[in-house]
Image (cartoon, rainbow, N blue to C red; front, side, top):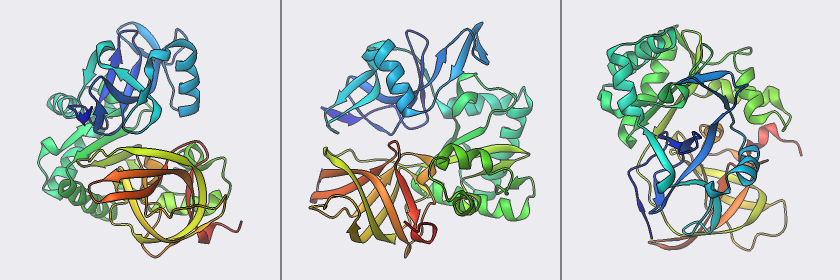
Length: 333
């Protein structure tokens, strides 16, 4: 039986073999934690922790193949979702890393330039937004001690209201601070190619990425902020990959993780869809702030049937290989 667990988005797990996984979402089975592989021991790796070298891995397809070959115990059927996902059985967890605890530790004694940048950024956000410090946490490589001089600042914000306040505070800081900035034509290139490099139309997509508030640069370092809130886990059933056009009717939840868009006027572009999805959902940062209410969009993702308290509904999950959410102003095909 599934339940809300003590693990949430942005936590990290270390396994008995020394693999590091990033927790995805806040709803997990009793016997495992849904999490994706991020760092593996490798003598040729560019990062070091406790005398051991590590390399970063992030592509879902690549990491799934790696686990299938070397550690299939971390690929498990998640009954609620009726899917096989990367996940860590609770008996194989050797260490748990909590973002709020690590942030408090860093703020008490920032020891590197990256930690000093993080400290100034967090203090400015707290001052500007008025949210309590314990609403924020640090994730990514800084959380687990595998950061390098080129690492990003990854922040989590916990709570729906707190997230909205931080979002508005970031907008003000970017307008008035100077040291907190949106991406420009040059600095956007890394995230642009990482997210959309195989799709084309990069010039237009760059404009969307440059407008996004939840990433940019702070004192010359890339920052990424995730606004997290409580989730409800409902049984779902995958129905296959679909492509379609639709109109976004509500984008007010597009800033959160998971992000959500309500859609209407669905027009299929693949095999006929027997049911119309009413929302798009994703845990991937690339889909936050991607479209606004009123936009006509082209979508590719996985259609799911969801059994919720109000009955059966249909949604599209974005985040698989080749998935996209593109305003039709970018799309001529």
